[in-house]
Amino acid sequence: MRRFFMMAFVGLTLTFASNSFAAGYGAAGCGLGSMVFGNEPGIIQIFAATTNGTSGSQTFGITSGTSNCDASGIILAEREDDLFAAQNFDTLTKEMAVGNGEHLDTLAGLLGCPSSQRAVFASFVQENYEAIFTSDQTTADEMLRAVKDGMFRNPVLSSSCSL
Image 1 (cartoon, helix red, strand yellow):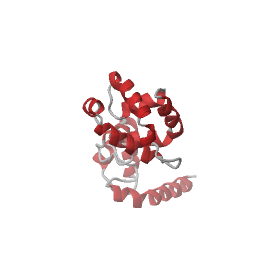
Image 2 (tube, one colour):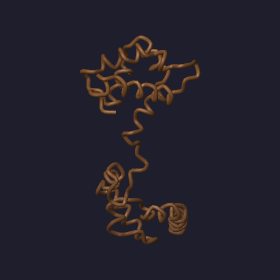
Image 3 (tube, helix red, strand yellow):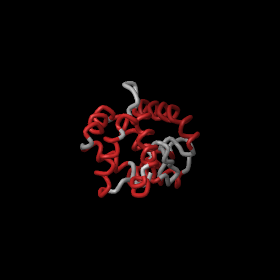
Image 4 (cartoon, helix red, strand yellow):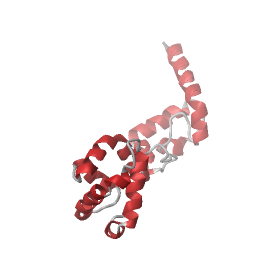
């Protein structure tokens, strides 16, 4: 049984070793354990993993980009509107046509429009529907770019929304 655990430990260490050394922390990953015990290979990584797990520092480090963690795996705020538009493209298309809807309201919020200006945003996209959707092949990226370009040119939305 002991031999099995040793083989499993060596296998896991070798599996994660190349990725972890490139990231600046050991097999235990980033977090307080990586700061205290470093990236030395071997059994010390068990202590690093235990420290990471018991302190909760790994979760905090990943979300905040601290404790030897970086935030590259997190969806950055700048990309939220792109992802939302891509995932809800069909619904947004319909709601923009009628100038109302929950997804449209969410998109306005992601584009930095305060709740007091969401009706203005909805009217704007409805009035400019033909300019936003130039063809049946319009993609979510093209739609979002057209919405943002139009918002920059709109005096009310450009001053009230924080693009």
